Image (cartoon, rainbow, N blue to C red; front, side, top):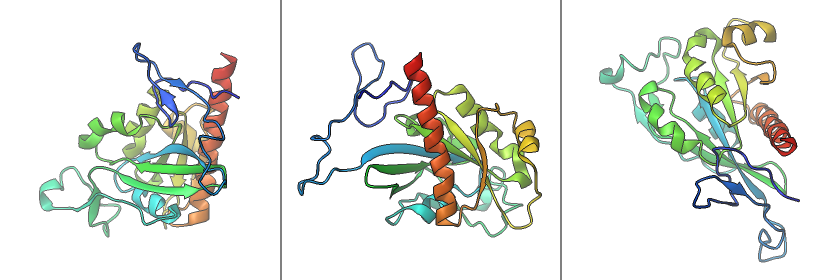
Length: 224
């Protein structure tokens, strides 16, 4: 069984011909067998994106099977003009490169999670971070919806399927899915889910939606 090509992304088990396009091939069971005879999980790269302080680092840390790698730096007065923490006054650090964690969904799939920095000034890193990703969870804070617009716009223009995850913060206003879609201007084919970045199982459910979206994208690519 072959694995469909995902344009402009290079997932694990790919080769890049001289022409520059990525060709994805199915990894054989023999190639993914551990020394004790068990089949090693298929690695899948997932991006966790969104604006400043929406819960990306928290989400990665909540679900990662191992202690996540973070690049958190202390926020200073010099960066106050860019890092507005009015809605998150307890936030003292910010991601300056990426977050990284991993979680085994089952014996067959292991997710490698890459959290992007939220500030616009680190946007130049996104192109490198999403290379090889099969899906993205764009996290939204409804108290400051406009902060997620750059991430939504970015992934609408990319070839990486994504879902919108509304992080449930205490005291935030409640909106229906239709209202959220209107505010974010996302297509009806983009899943919009609500979850709690602090809760492992809630994050898991949101990531499973991203996996379903990636699978639908792959099936569509096969039909094309």
